[in-house]
Figure 1: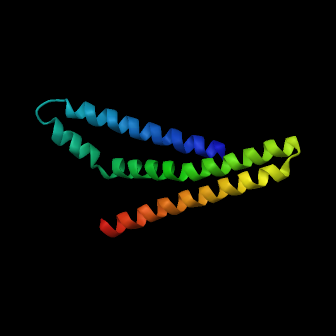
Figure 2: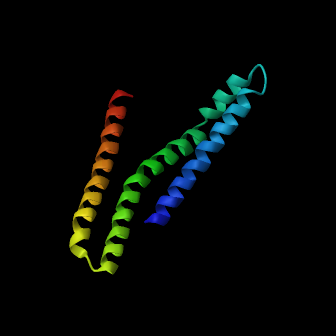
Figure 3: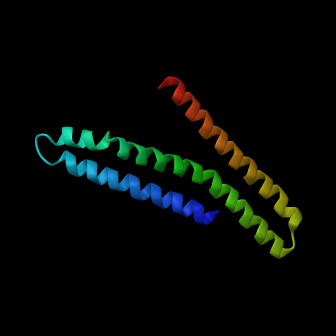
Length: 114
């Protein structure tokens, strides 16, 4: 799970940083820089990449919490204290679900307004 989280976050960083850099670069190209930057920023491929990167990031957060709970379970298991691991793992699993719920709620409100 941590590998998936890493790849989703790395993809997000690459897409967003490149788009920010290229947008500002186009803005400063000259008198028509704003129009060029606007056409780049609103290009359907660029918009799709940006939206997928942000969705991947918001998916990676609950995955990170869930994978952290797996790591906690493993560490506590090696120490032989399963009873201490259970509340921590349950709490992290619940928080992961809460984060998914919050993300879905934001998405539904946005789609309702947009």
